[in-house]
Image (cartoon, rainbow over all chains, first blue to last red; front, side, top):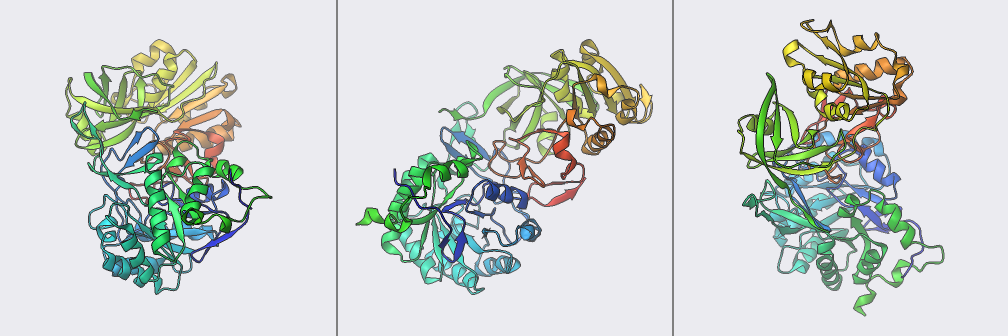
Length: 295
Length: 254
């Protein structure tokens, strides 16, 4: 397997301790849990998505473990403005605040709360199961461009997380690029559903949810590959990554860094595990493999 | 790997334990360690974490939407069960168990496994004491009620003064958080905090250690996966007894 030279990396205007970020929505509700993941090897962390008002999220069940996949519909639970208190103690650590809103103005409002407290923003334009938010906006290139532009105007690095639940993800990626995004994150969960045959009803309280984990890795690789051909800004690969080889594959598809979420369920030390396999002093520079599968 | 969809169970019996607590028995047994919990799905309402009070029962205090809906159920109704989840109590050979109110629920199976020498059981009043008879069969029970209607008048902490903690190798505690915090402070003052374990209750969404809704300060440990049972030493410098977070993640003082 390819091994990489260790060291800090700058992606989309944010300097990370390594190429592996904690994905939004996973262990990102409190400052303490984000700190724990940084201490346990994450090169950067993305917070739970924060919105204009506090939200309790959907009624349960909110999650179903499906083999190596996870189906979830949390419903964007978040403490809104109060979250500033959670991350204020994290100082200059590589913390990216994930934000959502129902329109460009709401995105900008939430982003302003975190000015001076965050290394960058990740715009959640991709949650597949929150009415009026996330993918409800993220499937519309014009809205994606406007939301991105509003937040980017604050002068803080702005990543845009894309939904795979569209016919052409490159159209959305290009819209983010036009809006001034400093990087694209691909992908959010794949809209999905399971029905309990015993109960004769959907297993999630919200009926629909998003699938993550190993089963969506091939979809994520395909999306990153397509975006690399269509866009010029950096891409952060996300979706089903659980091994160092998965990281390398994402990079070969065109990703400069990756986000890891569901794999935490099997192993809270997943970042240390992958780092040990991925990095070696005599390793090669990532530039040698990023996008190499396109040649 | 298999899909871990909720297991459908039918209620075989519903036992009223106290004015605010019922035990729901189901038609399937689960292999578990005392202190472990399950996610209980009340179809059409919500899913909530609940400690197992035996291999085929949960003992529930009416508190919110899901527990309220459960209190309206009759035998034959169905629930979905995910689990058992989390880490239970560390077993000793000569244990002390301390319970307040519905906190006796996860401690009953511990007492029934013949490792609890003494049980301190507290509640506001006699009617609210949980599992007095069942615990009596398995261990030596000492009782305190706030109003003195049964046992010693006062709190379980008052009972601690009457026993010698050195006689016990492990101390398992479950109850309302202010009571548990008082127990920890008192036992710590006597120098035995390292023998204690406390079962925490926090709002949970996933129950499998990914969503982060139940993480506690300052270490970010997950109550659903790293707990719900934690050592007293670890909890001394934590949010335990001070505050908790609600469904949205906003803090609430205890």
